[in-house]
Image (cartoon, rainbow, N blue to C red; front, side, top):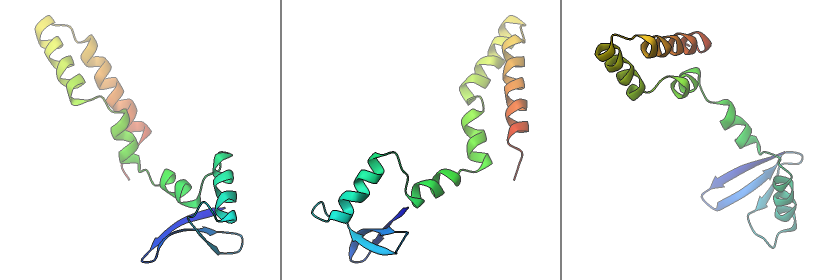
Length: 103
């Protein structure tokens, strides 16, 4: 596995197996091997860590009904005396809250 690294001297790749520092240069054969490794749908350590950092709050906010959807449901309920849309929004909120409890 590999890890991306940037320091004062520039950007390079660290090979996990032997901690080798691989310069980001197309002429470098180890960098070419790294690019081939990425092309085979592998992920660097950084990519894996970032993917796992998403919190429950972030996941919840992606699934919650938008403010626009909530307001639309309220106006429809008021205008038409029909709570069907409002009930669906409330159910989605409850479902999402249960799926992603507060941390």
